Length: 291
Length: 77
Image 1 (cartoon, chains in turn blue, yellow):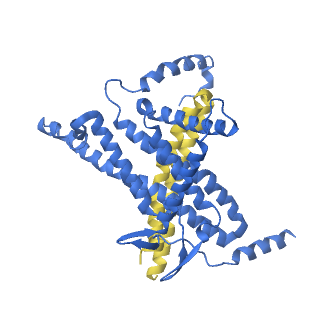
Image 2: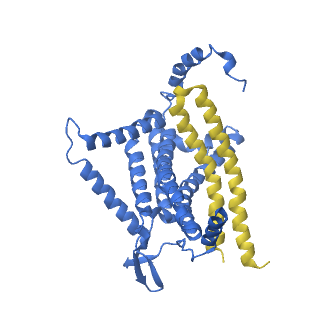
Image 3: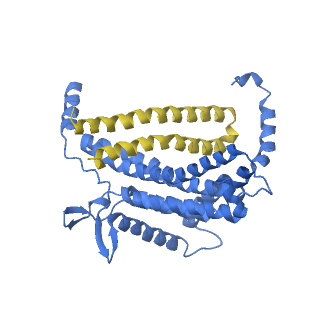
């Protein structure tokens, strides 16, 4: 019997329907003058509308004694706020709107793209049919735009905190004038590292979402119902973690450059709170292996 | 070996070998995080946050490999 089941499974797997992975380029749907609207832009707009609708509905009737819905929303937003405050140090609270905005919009974007049927609305174009909507983050243009926005925000907030001296971190003219060539070279490496931030931020989100779409398409083609497992993985882990990571990295990058020297960070504050715990733990010193 | 076969082989090798390093890195990071959490459970939230960041930076390398193999599969002619 087991053999029969196995043979059935193999038979099922050996049946290859043509795997329809989305093309790497978003298809243009229509154009207004020279502005071309692609299907991923339509997807982004849809996510935008849903986010605005969600926020306006959820915050319409705020009362002093919250009901169930308001409590849930307050719990979620409060959790995000505490997360941002914990990650961003002294400027975490002021960067919360950016973090939460990025997170919620990206999450809505990733989730609506995973609703079955989202990519199945086909329209007829000049070269064949193509889907009307496409996950915005499965288009590199969208993630690149977001990464560029974060990049400029990092450096604008750096200049706002440190003034023109901020650029000495990258093109270290003062060190060169004093003859410290190594510091100057380190500054050049810093500059390259800054541009690597654009690449890593944009490619991480793009490749995760696009790779997820291909993964689901391939697994559906290979094994049919087993794709549900990967679907759950995409919905619960990849979509949430990648949205969170994009917002979190933007938050951390900006908070790193906007920390001024007057109060040297909250890192020193957290040390005394850790120390007593270490002391209480040392009642069982043999439990701690030498590392 | 014709060009298309080399392309497919390259795509497979790119993501396969790229995933090795990222996998080792992610395993190291989360293993150490588990050690830390089991030693000091009250620091779980802080450690988890650092762990997620570390995992993401490891994963980025695999993502670069994925991009290369996607380019080989879909873009390169």
